[in-house]
Structures are given as C-alpha cells and as structure tokens.
Image 1: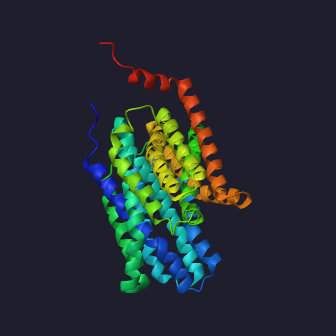
Image 2 (image 1 turned 90 degrees about the vertical axis):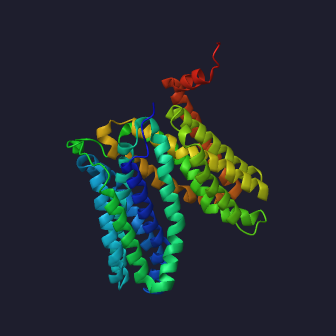
Image 3 (image 1 turned 90 degrees about the horizontal axis):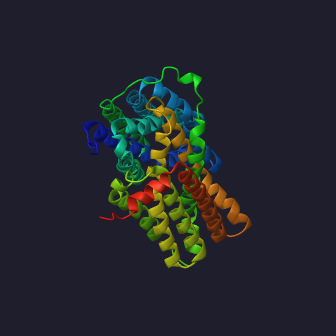
Amino acid sequence: MAGRLLTPAFLALAVSELAYFVAVGIMIPVVPLYASAELDAGPVGVGVAVGAFSVTALVLRPYAGRLSDRFGAGRLMVLGGLLFAVVAAAHVLAVNYAILLALRVALGVGEAVYFVAGIAALADVAPPDRLGEALSYSSLSLYLGIALGPAIGERLVDVGGFPAAWFGAAVLAALACGLALRIPSEARAPDATALPLIPRTLIAPGLAFLAGLAGAAGFLGFAALHARDIGMEGAGTVLFTYGGLVIVCRLLFARTFDRHPAAALSAFALTVCAAGLALLGLVRVPAGLVGGAAVLALGVTFLTPSFYREMMARLPANRRGAAAATFSIFVDLGLGLGPVMFGVVARVTTLPVAFLVAATVVLLAAALVARRAARSGELQVVRRKRRPSPV
C-alpha cells in the first residue's frame, strides 16, 4: 500500500516553494529594468547583473548539498529563504552598479541553499514509493512561480516603484522561510567532507538528463525565431501549448511516474523528447511547430520526475543533499547550455538542422539509458508487468 503523500510537511514544502519561486519570478524582469533605467547599465552590464545570480548559484550548489546532509534540509531551506529575503530587501540600497552586482551574488547564495535543500527535503517528506508523483506536484510550484512572478513584479514597479518590487519579493521569501520551519530537518552525514562533492555514480544519468533538458531549453530559446521563419506571427500559441501540456500532463500522469523502473521511464522520456525535436526540425510548417512542441512537452513531463527518482535512489538517505545538488547542477547546465549549443549549430547550418542535431543527441542518450536499464534487468521487469495473465 502506497504511503500518504499529502501530509502537513509536504504541503508546507509545496507552498513554501511556491512563495519562493514567485519571489524569484518578481526579480526576473525587475533587475534588468532597474540596472538599465536607474543605473544606466548597458547591455553587457545588464547581462552580467542578471547572470551573476545564476552563476553563483551553480557554483555553490555542491556545497549547499553537503551542508544539507550535515545540518538537515529543513534548516537549510530556512537559511536560504531568510538570506534571499534580506538580500532582496537590501536592493533598495543599490545606488550604484557595484552594489547591485554584489547583491546579485549574495542572492545567488540564497538561491543555491534554498533550491538544493528543497529538492533534498522533498525526498525526506515523500514516501519512497511516491517520489516521482511528489516531484510532479512539487514542480508545479516552480512553473506557477516563474509564470506569475514577472507579471507581479512589473505591476509592483508600476504601483510603487522599484522598492515595492524589492520588498514584495522579500515578503514572499520570508513567507517561504516561515513555512520551511514546518519541514522536518535531520542531520545525517557529519563526515560528508571526506566524500566527493559530485558523486561519480550520478554522472552518467546526469549527462543523459542534461541532454534532454538542453533540447527542451534550446526549443524554448529559439521557438520565437523558428515561428517567424516558417511564417507565424509569433510563438505565443506554441509556448502556451508547450507549457500548458507540461502542467496538465504532470497532473494527469503523476501516479504513473512511480509504477515503472526509473531508468526505463527515463529512456522513454528521452525517446519522446527526441521525437518532438525531430518533428520540429522536419515539419517546417505551423502545424509541425505546434505538434512538435506538444510531443516535446509530453517527453519533458516524464523527463524530470524519472531522472529525479533515479538519481535520488543511487545514493543512501544520508546523502540526499549531495544527490539533490548534483541533480540541480545538471538542471542548470541543461537550461544554460541548450540555447547556446542551438545557437552555435544554427549559425553554421540552419535552425531546423539544430533541432535535428539535438534530436540525434537526445536519442543517443535514450539508447544508452535503455542499454543500462536492460543490463540491470529493469526492462525485463517492465515486460513482465505488461505480460497478460494466462488465467
């Protein structure tokens, strides 16, 4: 019998993450506007100010994972949320570019701590046999936060200027911090400093996960240009189809993610992602773009929960922080490298070719994951489950 998922601790985690990601979303449009309009930063300065947050978070994630294992995920979420709240409010003191840049770096520290601890805490509060379902529901907090936050941020600037946006983000981060107090926090690995920051056993699945995410990120980065190239006025319909399907399918298939071996499901997700990318590259008409986006959305629906299950299962419970940190690093790398690699390939060839190259890479990753699953016997488990009973 499956364990109970919707516990007070899980609900506190989900709402805490929603508040936190809305706070992050508020900062997304407001920081470049502030750097440009108030501090006269040029395009490079704006880019550095925006990117400093992500780069700092990426570099510090392994250390945040180690701290999570040492002191407990719940405590680290409180610390990360509190730091984010204080630094967001301190943006009112950013009277020059140097101060803004320092605050962006400090905000990245809070992001690294909170995000990694949140991923580790999810494995603490969810039953082991419902981990994929738990991530499916939990990920909606991120999607909703990033969707709602920018609009709220722009509205706050219109109503009360930039200070309203800074304090609005700070209040939400403080709320996330308060809710995190209800999340269990167990110190598990006092000897973590003797262990590698990035566990070797997570590198192979992490690279396969990166391939799928990079393909999806490349699509998001170039959907508007591809839409224009094939005669569409914009990519609004395409992106709405993609985002809407991911959210709906995460809800519809939430209980499916734990019914099959993680590696087998990961191979399936990568194969579907590859099919969507291939469709985007081969069918160069509006229907092909919408259809390819829909197929890709289905693949992404299964991609993150299946690889999360697999990577968390590869380490013992006392190293969940390390697993969460490594998982989040590959998320960052996939989302960051995907558009860059698409741009490089498109520059020397064409954008449709970039989609086809991405499809090939993702399909290769799917084949390698499937081969590993077959060697471990996971594909045989799936076949036995599907075999009809003779009775």
